[in-house]
Image 1 (tube, helix red, strand yellow):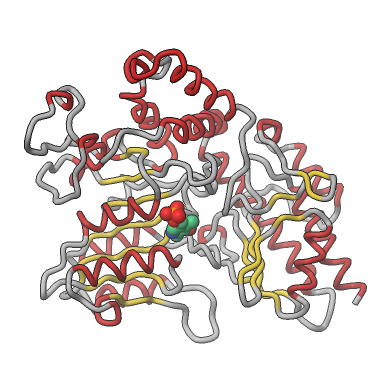
Image 2: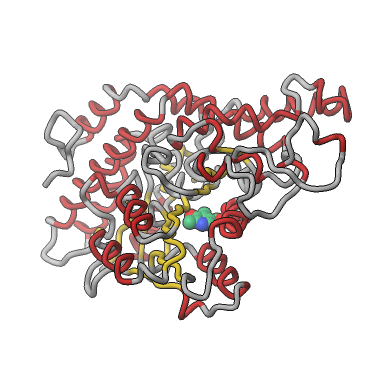
Length: 434
Ligand SMILES: *Cc1c(COP(=O)(O)O)cnc(C)c1O
């Protein structure tokens, strides 16, 4: 097994060993920068940072500063606030380039994820009678499926005909890259777009974005990714991989609060192309001349040219608080620790399966650390609900997906190896007692 690659020692299933891993973790002090929820009177083992990341302790101050400036300046805050609201989105350019591997002209924080997905599809899904098909993963997140369905319908196509979903082979849980590449090649004459959730929300599989992009381009199609479960979780090199476009939300691994402001990436070659089709709004107009309020839309020649509305400052303040922590910790280290946490968890879950002749848990997340981030999805073969309820009683916050999958995401910035071990101990005690 290669599950412990990246860690110097063989894993051990003891509390002492988990504590030892925590001790030598360079990111260990970051946990203190977050509020850990209480459950049944004690610190929760919070493994749902893939759903809603925890609140940094600095967030309230960042938001309060904007409330104060609004109180003190009113409309003058657009230019006179400590962080003038007119240029607020520019503060996110640099941190987002580090998190996504993009150039400064390629990223902007704006809107919400599904809204952004639609805006990008307006620009990058321009089907013709010949070229109208979309290749995506089977079991994409529902919002993404609905977005694709409504977009193909808008262009007069039917989902069943226009959208090709690539799923695992029968009896398997993960999609093979070769099957994705083969489908792209098969449909190369009719293909308009290839779009994947970079990390699948359900099974945690990380797709090879570079290979998929290369194949899409060879077929004459665009390649885009929904990074909801990838951003802040794994290292991204969007520009280097030549990805055409991507979008993400900030409330999962990016810890920027419920419904927080989202973001997009648009490759420079498209971002600078002011004739790229799009839906326009005044915030996409160059800021030097925006307030001349002239007729006729000219886009800013960067990703910012896709902005519609003036920025939601309060949610952006929370985003800033979190991205400052990412800057301090470094995306590379965060991604590395996330994989180490999940590697340790996978090792311990294998140990559980060796305890009884009957298998309790089938891991549906790839064991190869190049094909996952920190999330591990467990298909519960026996006593799933009972195990989940017991975990909850023991202050573990995990995620149950029907019919019988438990998703857990030990997150680099605030989870510990010790929590992974405690999680294992709880499940082990249920199984050995029954
Ligand atoms: C979380 C998630 C969403 C949610 O979309 P919102 O517009 O933020 O509500 C969409 N797509 C994927 C892949 C997700 O993981």
